[in-house]
Amino acid sequence: MRNSRGVESTAISKGGSEMFSLRVFVRVALVSVGLIVVGLAAGAPFMTP
Amino acid sequence: MTAPRAFAGLYTPGPLLGRESPVLRALWIAPVVLSAETGAIYLLPASILPYALPTAHILLLPFLLLNLRFIGTRLILAGLMLNLLAMVANGGLMPVEMSAVEAVGKHDNQELIVGDHIDGSKNVLLAREDVRLRGLTDVILLPVPQPFTRAVSLGDVAIVVGLAVIGTSLAWPRLRQPG
Image: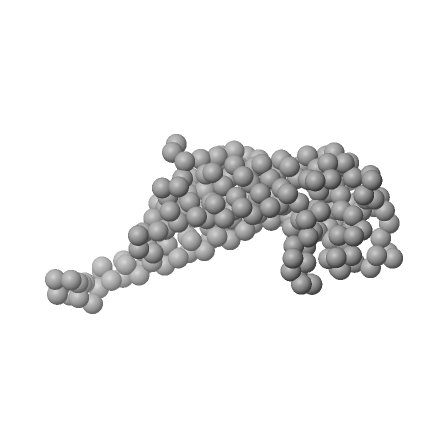
């Protein structure tokens, strides 16, 4: 992959970028699930008759 | 603002969902409370539920108080307190009326007894005239077809709005309260 100045990025930087994206994705997913759990714990709407 | 930067508030270092996470502190409390509530509903005798369920709800307070810097958390806290108020005012369980149970359609009305806990729920079936603080109880019917129909309370609505506000403030950190 080349950057805007036409310089090829190194394997290390590409790997780091992928790891960073994966980390952000996992974090967003977990926080989203966490928020849903907060809602369920606070209101327990699924436990209504 | 680009999509990655929109979630800049989530980039902060720290163990995922851990106590030191600066995003939402002590988020681990939520699944613990949810497990306690679910376990209480399905495992405890109905006579203990009026004490166990409000107590389980109170266990969520530390999480909410630790995250008061989020405006949405304050809404969730308000919703939780409204639900707790309705439950305590009606003996410990959230009251629901037969009309709401019929609209939801998950239970056979013939098997339900007014004044008894409804199996698999946090609710007690009460006659309309016996419900205290009726406006705070599960009287709002979500306008969705069965089997997704739910009877929810004003507190539940505040909680959902609070969650939406938190989600937005995580995506756009400028909406977060300072401090």
